Length: 128
Image 1 (cartoon, rainbow, N blue to C red):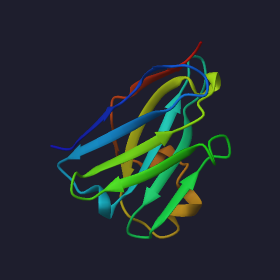
Image 2: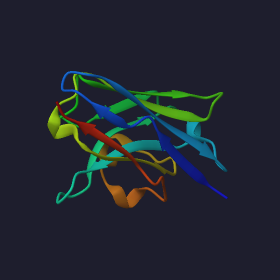
Image 3: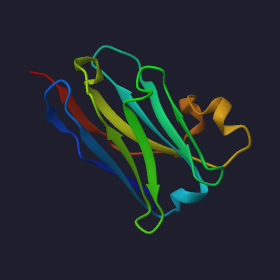
C-alpha cells in the first residue's frame, strides 16, 4: 500500500521559516517525480515545486523561487521543502504528490493530473 505523509506545517510569523517533509512508503521516491502543491481557502490548487532526482533537477513556481528549496533524502525515502522568508500569501494546505518517471517532466511538472499518489496535506499559516 502506497502512502505519502506530510509533516512540518504550523503557524509562523511573516519572514519566518518552516521545513516540510513528505515521507513515502510502498514506493521509492528517488525514481519518480515528486512535487509539492498548495491550496488556500477559496483558491485553486497551485503547483509550488518539484524534484526529479533521476534527472538531477528541481523546479519552482515563480511565486516561491529564491525562497523555497526542495530536496530529497534517499535513505529516508523522503522529500523536503524548506520554506524561508514566508509571506501571508503562502498560507495554505501543502500536499506532496508523486508521479511516474517520464521524459520532459520539467515541462509538465505543474500538471496535477500526472500525479497518481497524494498525501493528505499539512497546514501552513503565515500570520503575525
